[in-house]
Image 1: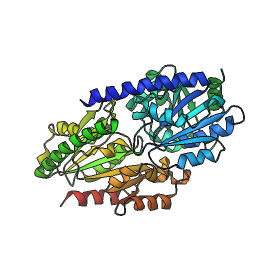
Image 2: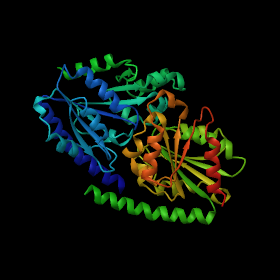
Image 3: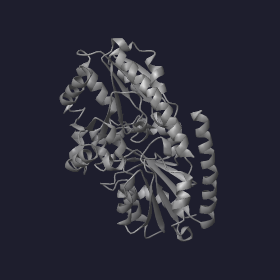
Image 4: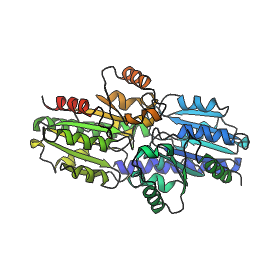
Length: 215
Length: 215
């Protein structure tokens, strides 16, 4: 019974996501759904990304969190329009939440809308929000076994950002093994190795993002 | 509507969890529900815990994962009875899964049953499985903002294990701030600082676990 209910919920979400996607296309805005575990470094990556792209394209951010506006406050400090969604305990963003949040944004003026999803490697991957593409942040300290243990999110994502690469020497993370697993799960996935504290790999990542935005 | 369905699902789960709890008490086994983000170090902590306690008390483990038996294989190598639950994409363990898994265990012979939940800071905290107490592993590399961002799991847990403490010098994690937030959320929470690679804090953690088991 739980499975059937889940199917109904997902079906209704898919319909709304399709409407969002159509609306985004009409407004000429590209939407990225940014996902990853709690503490993988999504918000810090976002701060660094905005600092590199804000003078090139017009960007807004939607921040998804269970509670608190901590992440939205960090983005706002970068001078970027940001909408906070608090899920009040909910484990993912859905299409209805995005539709509602977008009512407060001038989508026609934007080139790129980045949605930072709730920190979670499972549920966010199951809910289409109408994005153009997904990206997943996996920090080195989480371990190289995560792609095979949480395959859906890596199958769904156009890019995987292996973050906190500066901590590689202090862990037993096997970079080659992770790359092999990622490519096995998703042969066309684009893999970046980044360190937001050192600045490593951020040019490649933002260049890729820019190419996907300006079309 | 989604909220109402969720309430029904949680209600049914609570009933089954109460039955599990009664059964565990009759068998004289203490059950710990071990939770935390993907990559927080739950399985490694478990390996170190088993190595310290296996000659003192009789322990079995239930491993929850979406797919793969990677963690169960690691526990089995420690010579401990382990049951793998694959949730096939599901984001948490529930009372029915635990009831089914326990049918393969001789609960009467056990002192402690450790359930390693799916890596997720959100959903596992919402589903009672009939455990005696919960514990949450938070790795230093995840950031000190996690207790306030994911409050339920810290409110529900009898202990918080601040793991990978050896990586503290390489992060901006504020230990005092995290401790203050944890205690604000949950005044009686027991906080441990551990490093499984260095062996730090493991004696204190296993001693606490032992005291909660042998009564």
